Length: 538
Image 1: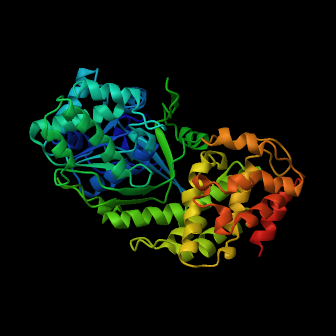
Image 2: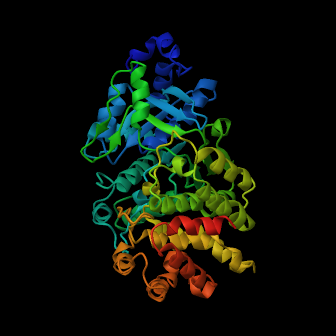
Image 3: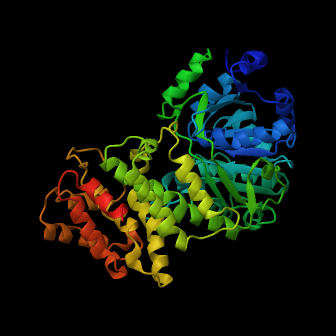
Protein backbone atom coordinates (compact mmCIF):
# COMPACT_ATOMS: atom_id res chain seq x y z
CA UNK A 1 0.00 0.00 0.00
CA UNK A 2 1.27 3.43 -0.94
CA UNK A 3 0.22 6.78 0.45
CA UNK A 4 -0.94 8.51 -2.71
CA UNK A 5 -4.22 8.86 -4.58
CA UNK A 6 -3.69 5.67 -6.54
CA UNK A 7 -2.70 3.80 -3.40
CA UNK A 8 -5.79 4.73 -1.37
CA UNK A 9 -8.14 3.81 -4.22
CA UNK A 10 -8.25 0.34 -2.67
CA UNK A 11 -10.16 1.58 0.36
CA UNK A 12 -10.90 -1.87 1.72
CA UNK A 13 -7.20 -2.73 2.06
CA UNK A 14 -6.67 0.33 4.26
CA UNK A 15 -9.89 0.02 6.22
CA UNK A 16 -9.19 -3.62 6.99
CA UNK A 17 -6.03 -2.47 8.80
CA UNK A 18 -7.86 0.13 10.83
CA UNK A 19 -7.32 3.29 8.80
CA UNK A 20 -9.97 5.98 8.47
CA UNK A 21 -10.09 7.39 4.95
CA UNK A 22 -11.60 10.66 3.72
CA UNK A 23 -15.37 10.36 3.39
CA UNK A 24 -15.47 13.03 0.68
CA UNK A 25 -14.56 13.14 -3.00
CA UNK A 26 -10.96 14.38 -2.91
CA UNK A 27 -10.81 15.36 -6.57
CA UNK A 28 -14.10 17.26 -6.32
CA UNK A 29 -12.88 19.16 -3.26
CA UNK A 30 -9.59 20.01 -4.93
CA UNK A 31 -11.32 21.30 -8.05
CA UNK A 32 -13.63 23.51 -5.98
CA UNK A 33 -10.69 24.79 -3.93
CA UNK A 34 -8.65 25.69 -7.00
CA UNK A 35 -11.60 27.64 -8.41
CA UNK A 36 -12.70 29.41 -5.22
CA UNK A 37 -10.16 29.11 -2.39
CA UNK A 38 -11.34 29.80 1.15
CA UNK A 39 -8.44 28.91 3.45
CA UNK A 40 -4.70 29.37 2.99
CA UNK A 41 -2.25 28.19 5.63
CA UNK A 42 1.39 29.27 5.97
CA UNK A 43 3.68 26.68 7.58
CA UNK A 44 3.61 23.02 6.50
CA UNK A 45 4.86 21.58 9.79
CA UNK A 46 3.54 18.93 12.15
CA UNK A 47 1.14 21.14 14.10
CA UNK A 48 -0.61 22.14 10.87
CA UNK A 49 -0.87 18.57 9.63
CA UNK A 50 -2.03 17.23 13.01
CA UNK A 51 -4.46 19.99 13.92
CA UNK A 52 -5.56 22.43 11.19
CA UNK A 53 -5.69 19.82 8.43
CA UNK A 54 -7.62 17.48 10.72
CA UNK A 55 -10.14 20.22 11.54
CA UNK A 56 -10.77 20.69 7.83
CA UNK A 57 -10.98 16.93 7.36
CA UNK A 58 -13.73 16.65 9.99
CA UNK A 59 -15.76 19.38 8.31
CA UNK A 60 -15.26 17.90 4.85
CA UNK A 61 -16.27 14.46 6.11
CA UNK A 62 -19.47 15.85 7.63
CA UNK A 63 -20.31 17.99 4.61
CA UNK A 64 -19.95 21.25 6.54
CA UNK A 65 -17.17 22.33 4.12
CA UNK A 66 -16.75 21.71 0.41
CA UNK A 67 -13.27 23.15 -0.07
CA UNK A 68 -9.94 22.22 1.44
CA UNK A 69 -6.80 24.08 2.51
CA UNK A 70 -4.05 25.54 0.35
CA UNK A 71 -0.85 24.78 2.25
CA UNK A 72 2.08 27.19 1.80
CA UNK A 73 5.66 26.62 2.91
CA UNK A 74 8.03 29.58 2.95
CA UNK A 75 10.97 28.44 5.05
CA UNK A 76 11.91 25.01 3.73
CA UNK A 77 10.69 24.39 0.19
CA UNK A 78 11.85 20.77 0.30
CA UNK A 79 8.95 19.90 2.61
CA UNK A 80 6.60 20.50 -0.32
CA UNK A 81 8.90 19.06 -2.96
CA UNK A 82 9.94 15.90 -1.12
CA UNK A 83 6.92 15.12 1.04
CA UNK A 84 3.65 16.83 0.07
CA UNK A 85 3.73 16.40 -3.67
CA UNK A 86 5.21 12.87 -3.90
CA UNK A 87 2.30 11.75 -1.69
CA UNK A 88 -0.33 13.67 -3.70
CA UNK A 89 -0.82 16.02 -0.71
CA UNK A 90 -1.96 13.13 1.49
CA UNK A 91 -0.57 12.49 4.95
CA UNK A 92 -1.09 10.08 7.82
CA UNK A 93 -2.23 11.28 11.22
CA UNK A 94 -1.58 8.88 14.10
CA UNK A 95 -3.37 9.89 17.28
CA UNK A 96 -1.61 8.47 20.32
CA UNK A 97 -4.10 7.93 23.11
CA UNK A 98 -3.18 7.72 26.78
CA UNK A 99 -4.93 4.34 27.11
CA UNK A 100 -2.43 2.83 24.65
CA UNK A 101 -4.70 2.77 21.64
CA UNK A 102 -4.04 4.56 18.37
CA UNK A 103 -6.22 6.07 15.70
CA UNK A 104 -4.87 6.15 12.15
CA UNK A 105 -6.32 8.65 9.69
CA UNK A 106 -5.45 9.37 6.09
CA UNK A 107 -5.75 13.13 5.74
CA UNK A 108 -6.92 14.44 2.39
CA UNK A 109 -7.99 17.98 3.29
CA UNK A 110 -4.89 19.62 1.81
CA UNK A 111 -6.16 20.49 -1.66
CA UNK A 112 -3.05 22.18 -2.96
CA UNK A 113 0.48 23.05 -1.82
CA UNK A 114 2.48 26.09 -2.85
CA UNK A 115 6.04 27.28 -2.33
CA UNK A 116 6.43 30.83 -1.07
CA UNK A 117 9.19 31.78 -3.50
CA UNK A 118 8.93 35.21 -5.12
CA UNK A 119 11.63 34.21 -7.62
CA UNK A 120 9.48 31.35 -8.89
CA UNK A 121 6.92 32.99 -11.17
CA UNK A 122 4.67 29.92 -11.34
CA UNK A 123 4.52 29.34 -7.58
CA UNK A 124 4.25 32.98 -6.56
CA UNK A 125 1.88 33.74 -9.40
CA UNK A 126 -0.47 31.03 -8.20
CA UNK A 127 -0.41 32.49 -4.71
CA UNK A 128 -1.16 35.95 -6.06
CA UNK A 129 -4.16 34.52 -7.88
CA UNK A 130 -5.37 32.90 -4.67
CA UNK A 131 -5.03 36.15 -2.73
CA UNK A 132 -6.81 38.05 -5.49
CA UNK A 133 -9.82 35.75 -5.17
CA UNK A 134 -12.85 37.36 -3.44
CA UNK A 135 -13.74 33.94 -1.99
CA UNK A 136 -10.64 33.73 0.21
CA UNK A 137 -11.74 34.13 3.82
CA UNK A 138 -8.65 33.56 5.93
CA UNK A 139 -4.94 32.94 6.02
CA UNK A 140 -3.72 31.03 9.07
CA UNK A 141 -0.12 30.78 10.25
CA UNK A 142 2.15 28.42 12.16
CA UNK A 143 5.56 29.93 11.44
CA UNK A 144 6.81 30.10 15.08
CA UNK A 145 7.03 33.26 17.18
CA UNK A 146 10.39 34.13 15.64
CA UNK A 147 8.74 34.17 12.22
CA UNK A 148 7.02 37.47 13.01
CA UNK A 149 10.24 39.28 13.94
CA UNK A 150 11.01 42.47 12.07
CA UNK A 151 13.81 43.58 14.41
CA UNK A 152 16.65 41.82 16.19
CA UNK A 153 17.26 41.78 19.94
CA UNK A 154 18.95 45.20 19.84
CA UNK A 155 16.00 46.83 18.10
CA UNK A 156 17.58 47.08 14.67
CA UNK A 157 15.58 46.10 11.61
CA UNK A 158 16.75 42.71 10.35
CA UNK A 159 18.85 42.96 7.15
CA UNK A 160 16.46 40.90 4.99
CA UNK A 161 13.50 42.98 6.22
CA UNK A 162 15.35 46.24 5.64
CA UNK A 163 16.18 45.20 2.09
CA UNK A 164 12.51 44.45 1.43
CA UNK A 165 11.46 47.80 2.90
CA UNK A 166 13.65 49.49 0.28
CA UNK A 167 12.80 47.22 -2.66
CA UNK A 168 9.02 47.16 -2.36
CA UNK A 169 6.38 44.48 -2.87
CA UNK A 170 7.29 43.11 -6.31
CA UNK A 171 9.80 40.42 -5.34
CA UNK A 172 10.56 40.53 -1.62
CA UNK A 173 13.07 38.05 -0.22
CA UNK A 174 11.95 37.69 3.40
CA UNK A 175 9.15 35.40 4.54
CA UNK A 176 7.12 38.28 5.94
CA UNK A 177 7.80 40.42 2.91
CA UNK A 178 6.37 37.76 0.64
CA UNK A 179 3.26 37.39 2.81
CA UNK A 180 2.62 41.13 2.79
CA UNK A 181 3.25 41.22 -0.96
CA UNK A 182 0.44 38.70 -1.38
CA UNK A 183 -1.81 40.82 0.82
CA UNK A 184 -0.94 43.78 -1.41
CA UNK A 185 -2.08 41.71 -4.39
CA UNK A 186 -5.43 41.26 -2.65
CA UNK A 187 -5.65 44.98 -2.02
CA UNK A 188 -4.84 45.75 -5.66
CA UNK A 189 -7.44 43.26 -6.90
CA UNK A 190 -10.27 44.95 -5.05
CA UNK A 191 -9.29 45.44 -1.40
CA UNK A 192 -11.28 42.34 -0.49
CA UNK A 193 -11.67 41.53 3.21
CA UNK A 194 -9.64 38.76 4.86
CA UNK A 195 -8.68 37.48 8.32
CA UNK A 196 -4.95 37.03 8.94
CA UNK A 197 -4.92 34.50 11.77
CA UNK A 198 -1.78 33.59 13.67
CA UNK A 199 -2.19 30.24 15.41
CA UNK A 200 1.34 30.13 16.74
CA UNK A 201 1.84 29.29 20.39
CA UNK A 202 2.63 32.77 21.70
CA UNK A 203 0.68 35.40 23.61
CA UNK A 204 -1.13 38.10 21.65
CA UNK A 205 -0.08 36.41 18.43
CA UNK A 206 -2.51 38.48 16.36
CA UNK A 207 -0.74 41.66 17.41
CA UNK A 208 2.62 40.18 16.44
CA UNK A 209 1.36 39.43 12.94
CA UNK A 210 -0.37 42.81 12.68
CA UNK A 211 2.73 44.71 13.72
CA UNK A 212 4.86 42.89 11.14
CA UNK A 213 2.36 43.51 8.33
CA UNK A 214 1.94 47.14 9.39
CA UNK A 215 5.71 47.69 9.34
CA UNK A 216 5.90 46.59 5.71
CA UNK A 217 2.78 48.49 4.65
CA UNK A 218 4.08 51.70 6.23
CA UNK A 219 7.59 51.31 4.81
CA UNK A 220 6.25 50.72 1.31
CA UNK A 221 3.66 53.49 1.35
CA UNK A 222 6.10 55.97 2.91
CA UNK A 223 8.54 55.28 0.08
CA UNK A 224 5.89 55.45 -2.59
CA UNK A 225 6.41 51.77 -3.43
CA UNK A 226 2.78 50.85 -2.68
CA UNK A 227 -0.48 52.69 -3.13
CA UNK A 228 -1.15 55.05 -0.22
CA UNK A 229 -4.45 53.29 0.44
CA UNK A 230 -2.70 50.03 1.32
CA UNK A 231 -1.82 51.21 4.81
CA UNK A 232 -5.44 52.24 5.43
CA UNK A 233 -6.55 48.80 4.17
CA UNK A 234 -4.25 47.02 6.63
CA UNK A 235 -5.43 49.21 9.49
CA UNK A 236 -9.14 48.78 8.74
CA UNK A 237 -10.34 45.84 10.86
CA UNK A 238 -13.50 45.62 8.78
CA UNK A 239 -11.32 44.64 5.82
CA UNK A 240 -8.19 43.05 7.34
CA UNK A 241 -8.39 41.52 10.80
CA UNK A 242 -5.67 40.02 12.97
CA UNK A 243 -7.50 37.82 15.53
CA UNK A 244 -5.78 36.55 18.66
CA UNK A 245 -5.75 32.82 19.25
CA UNK A 246 -4.64 30.22 21.78
CA UNK A 247 -3.53 26.84 20.48
CA UNK A 248 -2.57 23.79 22.50
CA UNK A 249 -1.70 20.37 21.12
CA UNK A 250 1.52 18.41 21.53
CA UNK A 251 2.89 17.19 18.19
CA UNK A 252 6.39 15.78 18.69
CA UNK A 253 8.61 14.91 15.79
CA UNK A 254 7.61 11.64 14.04
CA UNK A 255 8.54 8.77 16.34
CA UNK A 256 10.42 5.66 15.27
CA UNK A 257 8.02 3.35 17.11
CA UNK A 258 5.10 4.82 15.16
CA UNK A 259 6.99 4.37 11.91
CA UNK A 260 7.61 0.71 12.79
CA UNK A 261 3.91 0.24 13.54
CA UNK A 262 2.99 1.63 10.13
CA UNK A 263 5.63 -0.50 8.41
CA UNK A 264 3.96 -3.61 9.87
CA UNK A 265 0.85 -2.53 7.98
CA UNK A 266 2.91 -2.87 4.79
CA UNK A 267 2.76 0.83 3.91
CA UNK A 268 5.47 1.78 1.44
CA UNK A 269 7.39 5.04 1.25
CA UNK A 270 7.43 5.84 4.95
CA UNK A 271 11.06 6.88 4.92
CA UNK A 272 11.61 10.21 6.63
CA UNK A 273 13.49 13.03 4.95
CA UNK A 274 16.02 15.38 6.49
CA UNK A 275 16.14 18.43 4.26
CA UNK A 276 19.15 20.59 3.47
CA UNK A 277 17.82 22.99 6.15
CA UNK A 278 17.87 20.11 8.65
CA UNK A 279 14.10 19.81 8.82
CA UNK A 280 12.94 16.33 9.78
CA UNK A 281 9.78 15.41 7.89
CA UNK A 282 7.87 12.20 7.35
CA UNK A 283 4.72 11.12 5.55
CA UNK A 284 3.05 10.73 8.93
CA UNK A 285 2.64 12.86 12.03
CA UNK A 286 2.00 11.62 15.57
CA UNK A 287 0.18 13.69 18.16
CA UNK A 288 -1.75 13.52 21.42
CA UNK A 289 -5.52 13.20 21.46
CA UNK A 290 -6.16 16.41 23.42
CA UNK A 291 -6.35 19.71 21.59
CA UNK A 292 -7.57 23.24 22.20
CA UNK A 293 -7.96 26.13 19.78
CA UNK A 294 -9.61 29.36 20.91
CA UNK A 295 -9.88 32.19 18.39
CA UNK A 296 -11.13 35.76 18.53
CA UNK A 297 -14.21 35.81 16.31
CA UNK A 298 -13.15 38.58 13.90
CA UNK A 299 -13.54 37.40 10.30
CA UNK A 300 -14.59 40.20 7.94
CA UNK A 301 -15.13 37.86 4.96
CA UNK A 302 -16.78 35.03 6.87
CA UNK A 303 -15.12 31.76 7.87
CA UNK A 304 -15.58 27.99 7.79
CA UNK A 305 -17.80 26.65 10.61
CA UNK A 306 -14.81 25.46 12.63
CA UNK A 307 -16.83 25.53 15.85
CA UNK A 308 -18.45 22.34 14.56
CA UNK A 309 -15.01 20.72 14.72
CA UNK A 310 -14.35 21.88 18.29
CA UNK A 311 -12.80 25.33 17.84
CA UNK A 312 -13.97 27.92 20.38
CA UNK A 313 -14.77 31.37 18.97
CA UNK A 314 -15.02 34.19 21.45
CA UNK A 315 -13.98 37.76 22.28
CA UNK A 316 -10.35 38.92 22.33
CA UNK A 317 -10.42 39.41 26.09
CA UNK A 318 -11.47 35.78 26.57
CA UNK A 319 -8.70 34.52 24.31
CA UNK A 320 -6.25 36.42 26.49
CA UNK A 321 -7.71 34.84 29.63
CA UNK A 322 -7.44 31.34 28.14
CA UNK A 323 -3.81 32.01 27.26
CA UNK A 324 -3.04 33.22 30.78
CA UNK A 325 -4.82 30.25 32.30
CA UNK A 326 -2.73 27.81 30.29
CA UNK A 327 0.64 29.58 30.41
CA UNK A 328 0.56 30.92 33.97
CA UNK A 329 -1.22 28.13 35.83
CA UNK A 330 -2.63 25.03 34.24
CA UNK A 331 -0.06 23.60 31.83
CA UNK A 332 3.18 25.43 31.18
CA UNK A 333 4.32 25.72 34.83
CA UNK A 334 3.79 21.98 35.28
CA UNK A 335 5.78 21.27 32.13
CA UNK A 336 8.70 23.44 33.22
CA UNK A 337 8.82 21.86 36.69
CA UNK A 338 9.00 18.41 35.08
CA UNK A 339 11.69 19.63 32.69
CA UNK A 340 13.98 20.93 35.43
CA UNK A 341 13.60 18.03 37.83
CA UNK A 342 13.42 15.46 35.06
CA UNK A 343 16.90 16.46 33.89
CA UNK A 344 18.24 16.41 37.44
CA UNK A 345 16.78 12.97 38.14
CA UNK A 346 17.91 11.38 34.89
CA UNK A 347 14.60 11.07 33.03
CA UNK A 348 14.38 11.27 29.25
CA UNK A 349 10.61 11.09 28.86
CA UNK A 350 7.88 13.20 30.41
CA UNK A 351 5.56 10.20 30.56
CA UNK A 352 8.11 8.30 32.65
CA UNK A 353 8.29 11.21 35.09
CA UNK A 354 4.57 10.87 35.62
CA UNK A 355 5.22 7.48 37.25
CA UNK A 356 7.33 9.23 39.89
CA UNK A 357 5.09 10.00 42.88
CA UNK A 358 7.36 12.79 44.13
CA UNK A 359 7.22 14.62 40.80
CA UNK A 360 3.48 14.12 40.48
CA UNK A 361 3.00 15.61 43.95
CA UNK A 362 5.17 18.56 42.88
CA UNK A 363 3.14 19.43 39.78
CA UNK A 364 -0.17 18.80 41.50
CA UNK A 365 0.80 21.29 44.18
CA UNK A 366 1.91 23.81 41.54
CA UNK A 367 -1.37 23.50 39.66
CA UNK A 368 -4.08 22.78 42.18
CA UNK A 369 -2.76 24.19 45.47
CA UNK A 370 -0.68 27.20 44.48
CA UNK A 371 -1.99 28.05 41.01
CA UNK A 372 -5.77 27.67 41.11
CA UNK A 373 -6.29 30.27 43.88
CA UNK A 374 -4.99 32.97 41.51
CA UNK A 375 -5.92 31.43 38.15
CA UNK A 376 -7.45 33.53 35.40
CA UNK A 377 -10.79 31.84 34.70
CA UNK A 378 -11.74 32.44 31.04
CA UNK A 379 -15.24 31.02 31.39
CA UNK A 380 -15.09 28.99 28.16
CA UNK A 381 -12.71 26.34 29.61
CA UNK A 382 -12.81 25.25 33.25
CA UNK A 383 -9.31 25.63 34.76
CA UNK A 384 -9.61 22.69 37.14
CA UNK A 385 -10.87 20.40 34.39
CA UNK A 386 -7.98 21.58 32.22
CA UNK A 387 -5.45 20.61 34.92
CA UNK A 388 -7.28 17.32 35.46
CA UNK A 389 -6.74 16.49 31.79
CA UNK A 390 -3.10 17.60 31.86
CA UNK A 391 -2.24 15.52 34.93
CA UNK A 392 -4.50 12.58 34.24
CA UNK A 393 -4.29 12.18 30.47
CA UNK A 394 -1.80 14.36 28.64
CA UNK A 395 1.44 14.18 30.60
CA UNK A 396 1.22 10.45 31.48
CA UNK A 397 0.61 9.45 27.85
CA UNK A 398 3.29 6.76 27.29
CA UNK A 399 3.13 7.15 23.53
CA UNK A 400 4.10 10.82 23.54
CA UNK A 401 7.88 10.94 22.96
CA UNK A 402 8.33 14.32 24.64
CA UNK A 403 11.44 14.95 26.72
CA UNK A 404 12.33 17.14 29.69
CA UNK A 405 15.45 18.14 27.79
CA UNK A 406 13.38 19.70 24.99
CA UNK A 407 11.09 21.52 27.39
CA UNK A 408 14.05 22.81 29.43
CA UNK A 409 15.13 24.97 26.48
CA UNK A 410 15.01 28.73 27.18
CA UNK A 411 13.80 28.27 30.76
CA UNK A 412 15.04 31.72 31.80
CA UNK A 413 12.53 33.20 29.36
CA UNK A 414 9.70 31.06 30.69
CA UNK A 415 10.04 31.55 34.45
CA UNK A 416 8.69 35.12 34.67
CA UNK A 417 5.42 34.20 32.99
CA UNK A 418 4.97 30.62 34.14
CA UNK A 419 5.77 31.30 37.80
CA UNK A 420 6.45 35.00 38.29
CA UNK A 421 2.86 35.89 37.52
CA UNK A 422 1.66 33.62 40.34
CA UNK A 423 4.05 35.31 42.77
CA UNK A 424 2.86 38.75 41.63
CA UNK A 425 -0.78 37.74 42.05
CA UNK A 426 -0.16 36.50 45.59
CA UNK A 427 1.37 39.87 46.45
CA UNK A 428 -1.35 41.81 44.61
CA UNK A 429 -4.15 39.92 46.36
CA UNK A 430 -2.55 40.18 49.80
CA UNK A 431 -2.15 36.41 50.07
CA UNK A 432 0.43 34.65 52.24
CA UNK A 433 3.57 34.48 50.10
CA UNK A 434 5.07 31.97 52.53
CA UNK A 435 2.38 29.45 51.61
CA UNK A 436 4.19 29.01 48.29
CA UNK A 437 6.39 25.93 48.54
CA UNK A 438 6.44 24.33 45.08
CA UNK A 439 7.10 27.53 43.12
CA UNK A 440 10.25 28.39 45.16
CA UNK A 441 11.31 24.75 44.78
CA UNK A 442 11.21 25.15 40.99
CA UNK A 443 13.28 28.34 41.19
CA UNK A 444 15.88 26.63 43.36
CA UNK A 445 15.76 23.52 41.19
CA UNK A 446 16.48 25.56 38.07
CA UNK A 447 19.58 27.07 39.70
CA UNK A 448 20.63 23.56 40.68
CA UNK A 449 20.00 22.49 37.06
CA UNK A 450 22.38 25.21 35.82
CA UNK A 451 25.21 23.37 37.59
CA UNK A 452 24.83 20.71 34.84
CA UNK A 453 25.28 17.87 37.36
CA UNK A 454 22.47 15.42 38.07
CA UNK A 455 21.42 14.03 41.44
CA UNK A 456 23.92 11.18 41.17
CA UNK A 457 26.79 13.57 40.52
CA UNK A 458 27.02 12.92 36.76
CA UNK A 459 27.47 15.77 34.32
CA UNK A 460 24.77 16.32 31.69
CA UNK A 461 24.29 18.67 28.76
CA UNK A 462 22.18 21.75 29.41
CA UNK A 463 19.48 22.73 26.93
CA UNK A 464 20.12 26.06 25.22
CA UNK A 465 19.16 29.32 26.89
CA UNK A 466 19.78 32.96 25.87
CA UNK A 467 20.93 33.88 29.40
CA UNK A 468 23.75 31.37 29.59
CA UNK A 469 26.46 33.96 28.91
CA UNK A 470 25.76 35.75 32.18
CA UNK A 471 24.41 32.85 34.24
CA UNK A 472 26.83 30.00 33.61
CA UNK A 473 30.02 31.84 34.71
CA UNK A 474 28.30 32.29 38.08
CA UNK A 475 26.83 28.82 38.41
CA UNK A 476 30.08 27.10 37.39
CA UNK A 477 31.43 28.27 40.73
CA UNK A 478 28.82 26.14 42.50
CA UNK A 479 29.54 22.54 43.48
CA UNK A 480 27.94 19.78 45.50
CA UNK A 481 28.78 20.07 49.18
CA UNK A 482 29.85 23.69 48.84
CA UNK A 483 29.88 26.01 51.85
CA UNK A 484 26.32 27.15 52.63
CA UNK A 485 27.18 30.83 53.03
CA UNK A 486 29.04 30.74 49.71
CA UNK A 487 26.05 29.14 48.02
CA UNK A 488 23.71 31.85 49.29
CA UNK A 489 26.08 34.62 48.30
CA UNK A 490 26.55 33.12 44.84
CA UNK A 491 22.87 33.08 43.87
CA UNK A 492 21.74 36.28 45.62
CA UNK A 493 22.24 38.57 42.56
CA UNK A 494 20.34 36.12 40.36
CA UNK A 495 17.40 36.04 42.78
CA UNK A 496 17.24 39.85 42.53
CA UNK A 497 16.89 39.74 38.73
CA UNK A 498 13.35 40.76 37.81
CA UNK A 499 13.95 39.85 34.15
CA UNK A 500 14.18 36.21 35.21
CA UNK A 501 11.58 35.92 37.96
CA UNK A 502 9.29 38.90 37.13
CA UNK A 503 10.01 40.20 40.65
CA UNK A 504 13.00 40.72 42.92
CA UNK A 505 12.56 37.55 44.98
CA UNK A 506 14.15 39.17 48.01
CA UNK A 507 11.75 42.10 47.92
CA UNK A 508 8.88 39.67 47.31
CA UNK A 509 9.77 37.74 50.46
CA UNK A 510 10.91 34.54 48.73
CA UNK A 511 14.66 35.11 48.47
CA UNK A 512 15.54 33.39 51.73
CA UNK A 513 13.26 30.43 51.01
CA UNK A 514 14.79 29.86 47.56
CA UNK A 515 18.29 30.19 49.04
CA UNK A 516 17.48 27.64 51.73
CA UNK A 517 16.16 25.21 49.13
CA UNK A 518 19.19 25.69 46.89
CA UNK A 519 21.46 24.90 49.83
CA UNK A 520 19.50 21.70 50.49
CA UNK A 521 19.61 20.70 46.82
CA UNK A 522 23.40 21.07 46.67
CA UNK A 523 24.43 19.24 49.84
CA UNK A 524 25.51 16.18 47.89
CA UNK A 525 24.34 13.31 45.74
CA UNK A 526 20.74 12.36 46.44
CA UNK A 527 19.92 15.82 47.77
CA UNK A 528 17.56 16.63 44.91
CA UNK A 529 15.41 13.62 45.69
CA UNK A 530 15.48 14.12 49.46
CA UNK A 531 14.59 17.81 49.13
CA UNK A 532 11.80 17.03 46.72
CA UNK A 533 10.37 14.51 49.18
CA UNK A 534 10.67 16.87 52.13
CA UNK A 535 8.74 19.65 50.36
CA UNK A 536 6.14 17.78 48.33
CA UNK A 537 5.42 15.36 51.14
CA UNK A 538 4.23 18.18 53.39
